[in-house]
Length: 269
Image (cartoon, rainbow, N blue to C red; front, side):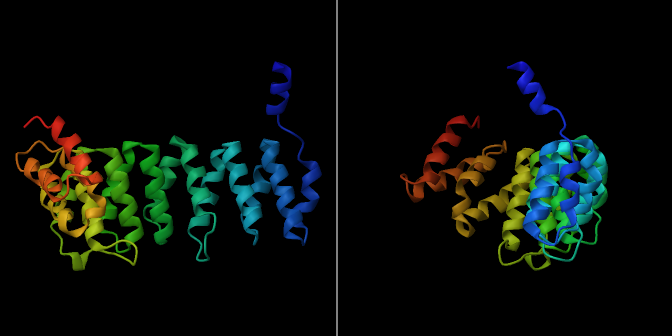
């Protein structure tokens, strides 16, 4: 049985798939690239990179997954370049997942991508760096607090929340003082939602400068009550208790009230 498992992990020949990589039928090309992906053969690397230029979603999908499986850092620059293309990116989530899997090897290229002219590339780079968790990324993520596009800003705020790095405290607090008219937003993410995300990241550090923005969530965004209450509970400040108790007073039977009770039980002040 062990020998059988070992054989399954050994690289397979790629020669049978190469002739079909330029076939006019996208289904045939997809099958060929899928074969390269499943081969786990390092010799497939240049062919998988070339397949990133295909017009077919299925071909590109298997190329990205194949490059992720090989784990060769040479794939990182072409994957990031995919994010910078003007055309729509149906496989951006897969590219982000692949780049994250490269771990430490991807950190420096992803930090460089935070300065890309493409908002999409900046956004996904920030998300990947937050998931990888290397503190070298923190200064670049802080710089994105001044990004003019809502996507990179949202991704940077989420990443800084994950990092819990004290270097971000003052920049996050300064962000909370901005006028909402000066904060990038779109039809999905409002200026207040961006400020609330910054407050969550600041509260993760126990910083009381997050309190006023989180207090506003009671009237402006009750749907986020569970996370808001959790983050308020991380701030050691006497102003927190009455803010949490408001959720109990509003309706003791709601999910908000349930979270409020749980958080209040653990407050030490």
